[in-house]
Image 1 (cartoon, rainbow, N blue to C red):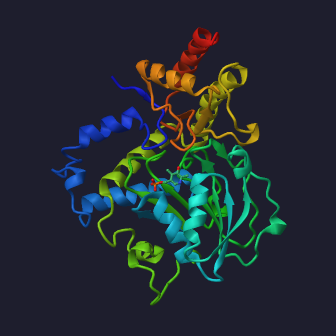
Image 2 (image 1 turned 90 degrees about the vertical axis):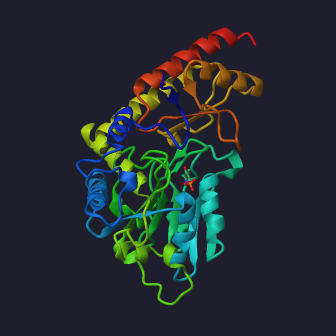
Image 3 (image 1 turned 45 degrees about the vertical axis):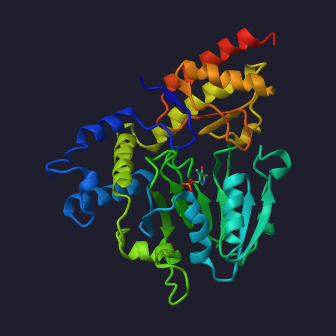
Length: 361
Ligand SMILES: *Cc1c(COP(=O)(O)O)cnc(C)c1O
């Protein structure tokens, strides 16, 4: 029996998508072979690859002056690729709103001056700091944010105004959860395993003028955006199966009416959970309301033993992977696109029951 999996990633995928992949696993179309077995240079795979790119362009309304790249190495690889490729004046601005944002900054330090413009570390990353654009460095090579903080359950409710400095956003845990205006960004990157597909591929959406020729610098070929852009992400063997799965997820999103519909559904799901948390005397969401994530909902009882009991009992009900990130503890329900409203409702029903049964403690 399939469970409701609240994992932060790899995470749940739509059942329709998994069934389609299963049905096509041994033979894709009339190719006589599995996607996994196909040459990445053949026309069958090429069609999948290009369809995935064009569906993403259509779904996110990506302007013509942006390229879509498929890169391996996960979100982490982008922490290194962005500074190496965008370095010009040798400095960049960072907003540190959690562990991933912090890692992007500390990796960037290897290549340039990585300035922390603001941080929410003082209150365990439970909010997004107010930003004053007059404090931004006009000569920065880029301005980096992590738009949705997977571990702490916060998100930017509005984007910083960075003027001509390219805004770089780690959207690993919120891409495709709602429409975004791509033209506001220099680079958007997202590993697939949160909201787009299986692990193995990271999508990079990059404005063309930021795809630079790094000449004879010592940046490795595999870490240059230009290598991917010049070769339609087929310079070497791409993660073909992951890209195929992303294509199926994009088809599923299209069948649901696109990102506006997905957003409305996600808002409905998140509201069920947050409304309950706000009314509960046992469970508490530590995030300032304005910055609450639509995708990752964190909560605690304030009693570690009780948290553990909750996670264990929820598991018996088919509500799994509700533990918070190992660095913070407590609980976290990741409710990405593929989590059906029934799963969230079942979680809230269980929380209500648990609260009633354990409130004497
Ligand atoms: C999961 C995650 C990452 C790390 O991704 P990997 O693919 O494991 O390298 C980076 N940023 C954010 C926001 C994430 O949620």
